[in-house]
Each structure stands twice: as C-alpha cells, then as structure tokens.
Image (cartoon, rainbow, N blue to C red; front, top):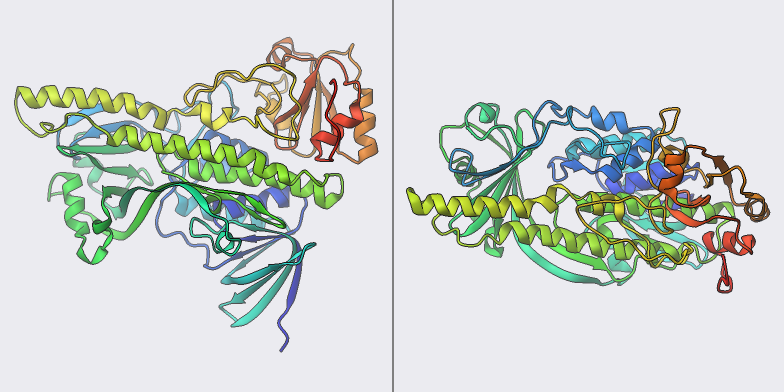
Length: 546
C-alpha cells in the first residue's frame, strides 16, 4: 500500500505550547497548517506554572483569555513568595502578593498574569487550535526525517497507531519540538551560551494536608535556604493539594536509582508528620542557550527548539509563544502574496536577540537567588542565627524582585535591529527588566490604552496593518493608496482621545499585524510606496526621508 502524501502550507513539528500557539495564530488568520505530535498531548508533570502578561494578551486576541483565567487553579489562593529553611523551619522573609482573583491588570495592559500549570495549559491551547477547521492536529506522529526541496519541504513521519508511514509536503516547516529538537539537529544548527547552569530534579507530589500543617501561609513559591545556600523550592500547582518541588543539585544527583525522593520531600517539609503522595520525579538540566540561527531555507525554529532558559521568571514559554505570533503573520503575508522575499528573514533578526535577552535575564534571576552570602549560621539558634537569618532574608527579598516583577521584559522588548521597522530618529528609551514605560517608537509594542467603548487599543490590531490617525487634519491617502496597490491589508482608524494621542506621540502611527509599531510620523511619508515595501519585506533602496 502506498504511503499517503499530505499537502499543507505550514507543517508544525511538536504540539506543545509553542506549536499549539503557532497553530492557533495561523488558524485565527485562516492559514491552513498541520501539527504532528509524537504523544497523545498528555502532560503528566507541571513544569510551567505562570502565564505572563504578554502571553495573556495573545490569549485575549485569540478569544481564550477567560479559559485561562478559569483553568481550574484556586484563584483565591494568595500568591506570596516565602523564603525559609523548610516548610516548618525558620521564616527568612515574605514577599506579600494578592490572589489571582484580587490581582488587577497593570496600567500598561488590559490583562493580568494567571497561574495555570502546564498540564492544563497545553491541552487548553491544543483544544483551541483544533477548533479551527484549517488546523489538522495529528497525535502519535513521529518525524523520521525531511528534505528541503527549495520551494517546499517533504517530511517523513510515522503513525505509531496505524504503523503507516505518512509523508507531508509543506511550503514551510517549523520545529517546535523542544530543547532536544530533532529538527534543529537535522539542520546542524548549533546552540550558543551556557549548556549547564545547574542540575535539578523536579518532584511532583500530592499533599492534601500541607496547607493546614505549616505556619508559612499561602504562597506561590517557598524557597528554601540552608547553610550551603539555596537548595530547593516548593511551588503551588493547583492551589489545593498539588505541589512541585525543585531540588538544585549536581550531576551525580541525576541518577534517580540513587536519589531518595521521599526523604528529600521530608527535608523540604521539615517534618515526617505531613503525609504526601509521590506522583513523579523528573531530572533536568538548567541551561542558557540560543540557536545560532532561527531559520534555514524553508525550515524555522520556534520555542525551546530555538532557545532554552532557566524557568526563573517564567520567560521560556512566553518567549516561545511570542516567536509563534511573530512568525504567524509573516507566513500569512508570504502565502497570500503581499509579503516580500525579505519578510521571513526578519523573523530571525527580530526574535533571536529577544531570546538571548530573555535567557540571560532568566539566568541572572537564578544566580541572584542561589548566590546567598554568609548563610552558614542560618539554622543556628540564638543571636548569631538571628543575625544571619535577617541578612539572608533581606538578600532574598531584593534578589527575588526581578524574578516576580519583570513587566519591562514581558512587554518592553523591542525590535531595534528589525529590517521591517522604520526608525523615526528618536533615541531608544532606557530598558529595564522591571519597569515598563510604554512607547510608540517604531520597533516597540504599540501601547495599550482604554478606548471610550471599553475596548483596548490592542484590540484594534491583528488582522492586518492598522494606521492610527490622531488628527482629522492629517491625510493618510498616500499610505492607503500604496497599501492598496501592493495588496497589503490596511485599516485606518481615527482616534480623537487626546490622552491616547499623547501616548502615541505622532499624528500617524502604522502598526503591524503582531501589534508592533512599524512606522510613525506627523504626515504621510514622501515615498509612501517605499515605506509599504519596507514593512512588508520587499527589497528596496535605503529610505532617504520618511
């Protein structure tokens, strides 16, 4: 029997958060795609815990943000951060935070972050992707190899249920197959950075009595410090009975045959009197790596296949979802014929620097809370121990802020070197991982502001380019004509609110389908056609004046 051949514009290898996010983005845009996933979609270990604000903004765009808010986490559970020697040991410090129900969106966004463990978030994204008729999601399909034929890619897969070979012909293929990406390996793309920040073991437990049997109060995370420094943390999973413990160790500890998980849990709890059930134990390696390129001909890398980073701060998955959104509109443009030959190259130019920044920040977060000075006496009774614990607590509270409060990195990343954004000559504003000041400078995320009808400016963006006009006296005709002649989807929206106008700073602001500013000015550019060509990736001469 001849093996079937499936044709699809975009083939996605891997159905995790990055692959499902790309499928949703393409489905939302009406672009057919096929997703192949080796497993059945089940996530039995909750690595991911927090869905950051930028990812929630994308969920709002896709119409699934309420599903994430109502994922099943106990939203009344307080999200404090506690530093201690164990769950029943000395309290070193506490960073007070409200619950998900009490949390409000920051002023710079219409949405707030949400706790949603990966065992719930992955299926949620997959279900949303499958709701699009244009998305073909295939479980139990393993990629065995592929060839790039120049104008298409042929992937050879194996359906483990039927035992049949399946060949998929795609215009583009995207590796979303994780840190050990077979797609990246087949392309011989190297990773640069730090291959080992630490060796760790995750222990997933159920303890229905834990909340009632310790005195540290509710917390999103409990970080444990001993005489040799920070050695473990316990993270809430469902806000009720499920918990994840992460042990920071060495390479020898990775041998699970010699690792006593139950005794380690008791050490974290600080007592033998709290009952628990051991669900699973997973060793892993904390890294800071970025692929040396995110594209090779017709094949692209997204998510952990392109970059790996410490989970401190929760930026790994968030960065991968942002990769998918950046690539999604570019695929649409090229496949529909209005995107130029340089557009897809801009994916690497835009996303690789951001991944490197996020990985470095995450590594710094990790180092800041494991590098605890002078903690030798942290378990000692008496004055020497009191002094030590006070100093350690102060250090941990200061070190933890960038881990928990990173809105500047979440929303303030900028495409400074993008070939499809046109500088207006203004200097880049200072960048802060912590603090985010909105700007409509080209290459930046278009600012959020509430409009009179209760919607956000972010709700205006996505389907095509949007030209915001903040003065009825300025004409947008030449940009509209140039877009129409090039087949570029462009919507002109006039906003009369002076507060929004002040936030955007120019009378005309051209926003890309992914919500980033491509160009701005107080009048149409002298050569509107050239501006439209640049932002859609058509090779053109250098812009003289815009």
